[in-house]
Image (cartoon, rainbow over all chains, first blue to last red):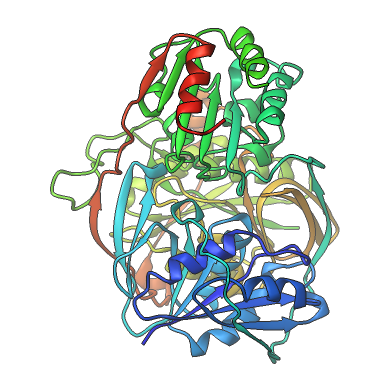
Length: 313
Length: 249
């Protein structure tokens, strides 16, 4: 009998969509009972959201001042303390989950399964390696807890409409003081979140400057899309790092992905291959991005993008 | 601080397009170019800059693997590391075992700071740094894009999904580095010659007294499902029509 504990990701006020994706993955573990745990200073709003996710049996809340904002070194011992009643502990393959989950696994004396793409059995999973150039089926050792991150781009969010019970829990874990939160700087953007957006417009090095990236912003705003970018564009300083899509940036699965002036290195493709429709606009007809695109247009982005933006009125 | 320890993993070079073996037993690595994991080069560069600012006195590079990894350690020495340690194993270590090996070396060497890449580009696991911090009972600052020190504390800016997060950690600690932290230096020929004289200790894994972690079995390797090439359109009007046909605009 499998029991899966899903670690909720949230910002103190709202649940991140990655949590419902982890639940979708947990539902693939045959016959699993699924609990979600919310670590927060005040958990009620986030817990109420988590309780709506279909497939969730219980939502546990652990309320401590030290849990706001989340710090991996403080969360890990609390998660590890809860883990003894579970066969699996899942978190998302986001910056949050990638930070905390390996720390949990090490405290429990196991390796982590990183980036689950599919569940093949209670201990058996598929995951990508080599920037997605290979998929490996792995088997965690029997009789030990499975600690894993879920590749969120591989799973649509589990539906809502549930009303799971919410239980407050106390965890008797001593928390370290060696790590202190100072601040977080966000892009201050009104645009949709890159991870959650249904549409993403992404620009590459061919834009040539930070100023020219305005073309990408205008098209994105017309479509209600989030902004993405290639590593080259970030390295050149055209856009902030949190926009980077690919092996070492964010892995996303929007319904529509428009790649503009992006040649399509394998490291970039690995971040978008689960997108619904990929559109590529590039002046080089040999660009590898066209090999994975559903719709391709060869030409000068500096004339095509403004024309496209106008045409979408 | 005194000592900084940096991990250097030998991996298939960044520019190689890896192929899965036809029998599904692994990926083809015969005759393939091997290099230092690119994130580890950034880690080493950062350690060298800290030392060059006078904030540390020694940089040690550590690799785990067969004698082949000496190549990557020599490159690290040529970049400017003071000495190297190779923990000899026949197969690559899983992340938790690697973390335990690092901890054993930390205890031998009395290390103040460990800097690692945020992930290796072969297994893409992104685990070892966090695991080391856990087994060592020390702070972790992952995905670092800026690092500074003030006495016994470090201030680290981290690349997270919503932007940049800054945390303060007490030393000793583990930092894992992201792409934007720095640009690693190129190795010059005279430095390669000099590196040959720098110490490179080899320690058999069995001599460390480290317990190997329960291993995750690799059952089968396969190539990814590839996307089909779609249609090409001639102009913006064609693109808009195609998007409308799919109900996307």
